[in-house]
Image 1 (tube, rainbow, N blue to C red):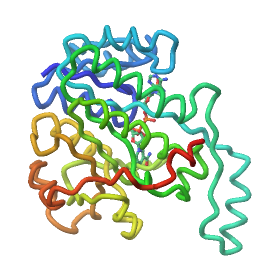
Image 2: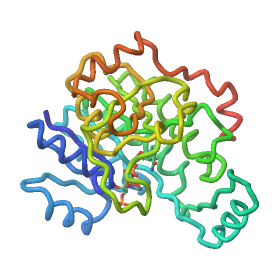
Image 3: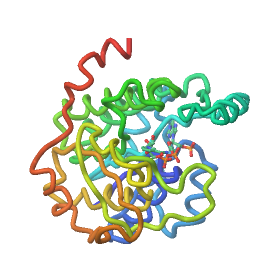
Length: 285
Ligand SMILES: NC(=O)c1ccc[n+]([C@@H]2O[C@H](COP(=O)([O-])OP(=O)(O)OC[C@H]3O[C@@H](n4cnc5c(N)ncnc54)[C@H](OP(=O)(O)O)[C@@H]3O)[C@@H](O)[C@H]2O)c1
């Protein structure tokens, strides 16, 4: 299959490109600058690349052109939060005083907030995919879409709520879809140790129930997430599905076999329920 990957320069998107090549697909890496295109081409042999900024004025036209002839689209774009370093002393002080919930603050550049990238930028990708005749869209999103009070929503401009709103548009679009909500991606920001895929047991769920697990069981290597994005393309059971996924700590349970249909069978057909949170529109204003 010819598979377009947006956000192909990102940490997970670039792994998706690699997994596509490994499985014999032809990836088309969609990135927003020539510099990123050059970087990717230096790492991947014979890579097709297209340029599109999903928030730019010509986003629809450039995406529609790029997606022409693609069988599938894997969306890995995301707004990129910027840590407010001045919030760190308060976090350290809070933790010293026993406030385990003390969290840093984040911000986004103007025009690159979650509403711009994760909602409008995903909507334009969905519209372009439909117009270009793409048959299947895999949307990499996040857990916490049912939890307005979660740190990601409170401290990052409702990022997962905006992602969820875009997921709803994908589902309503009539395109074949797979929506994947991973838990915390490994390696974590700033973490030095690699987090190889294919070594952990994966666990799927819906509606953020997996958030109840211990912190070590609410994470997942990016490489495993990338593998699922690619496996979804040729797993019929992954179509029309929206689910959460995390991993168990290394050594706990059997490593994921690569059989996505078997993994999803533990859900007995259940999907995330988009009536939650009931006041999503109100929350997004
Ligand atoms: N971090 C976590 O723990 C976590 C947990 C669950 C889910 N997720 C979600 O998983 C997904 C992958 O995460 P990640 O950390 O691998 O992502 P990432 O490295 O931050 O990659 C984001 C990608 O989006 C691209 N992008 C941003 N704005 C764009 C625009 N206007 N036009 C075109 N491309 C644009 C970036 O391009 P540039 O390279 O040019 O900046 C980059 O390729 C994201 O949706 C994220 O929210 C993350």
